[in-house]
Length: 307
Length: 263
Image 1: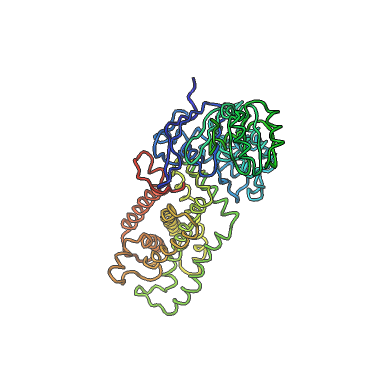
Image 2: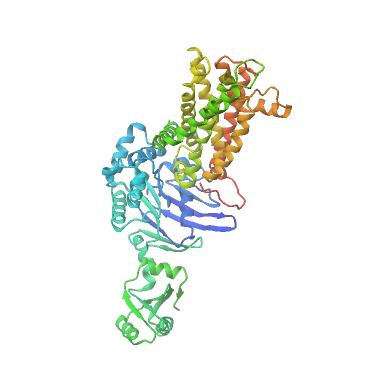
């Protein structure tokens, strides 16, 4: 069996009195796609900076391809490609110059730099913009340049902190397509965080974090299992009472109050439940749909699980 | 080899940035010329130096060092800028480590200091005689002065998190170093505490290197000049590396809980 891209055990960090990350246990195999989900302040960025060797762990251990992030961080860094929340593209350099600079930072030999930069430009579709100053690019293209920057030394592990923030759907699709290609052709492992929960659905594994703690960990299918095969989302002043009634009658597997709505996991008899919703008092909206990671997210960060 | 490649990549980036923002370089060149034209010309008619050297000739090596000092030290603002706007994380994530990052920054700051000083040196024929044999010595002294100034600037920048803070702190530091260096007036007759400060002041020894190169009288030996400048560089660079990436120092040590320093 090959060495995992990431092995973390009890990894944590405090900022003063604030426990930013309690204890992360994580194994990411080579070629895996793993998502970290959670609200702001959940500990996602802290986890990524710890694994990226940029923060010193307060407790626990972590290895990147077998290299300890404390004792062998230079060796670990050689295998890493990092995309931070903040853009790391110099506005006063052209796209090509930015990539040349990044190649130097990543330790790419001078004789290999041109080929590495050309390859990265081509993969991200940045060729026509190679000689444009980064400050003249749109936010989306700047982000793609940032991702090209992170991949030009062919890292075996990519750590991407909210890589799609500010990207329009076209650029998001281009990015995920690129990452998929990297995984299939090079076996690159990808650890990413995102606020767009639908982006995590193709992941091999998803960790939900809240207030520095891992509140759920599994495949998307495992995380969605408690919802059964459908979710009824209801709005209105009578939504909570309606959900309680379904629970009492054994028709709900899970009731999840969230912003302005109640999500109800259904244990079969969907038509019957829909008929009840249609005649229930105080409901302004009721929608039957498939469960999503957003449901799991709300469930694990403040759900009331039906008995 | 990888560390040197990383350092040179940083230098290339810094110099490309300067090429696209020429006002930074032009502003640095204007400062010593303002001193030469407005201060040196004015004092030249009233200042009587014990050595009998005209004031304009006396102050010229000091103005050359001023160009190195401000050119070299102020370039460290790039490090603060990168910390403030996130680029520093990319550099800190380099396998080459913070020493290589600071070396790259020191090289580009040295180039900036020397470039500004060479423009001032081009005015030498109007002020002081520099023979062809003296010229390489002067250039060498300017390289040393710029390099030491660059390292001092990096030390100041190593923990500062905003460009505004850097500008305030660096000016407060550089002006006393310049005024108590013998660059603008002889330091020999200063009150004893200030004379002691001047003797330990690395800028004093930068000025002496240049004075020595153009054949002017100096107070300290060449060995003393070299020892102070080498010692200052070594201590400042070591401190800058240690302070630059606080997380690096924490790694492997037990820590009390405290607020983090964003890398």
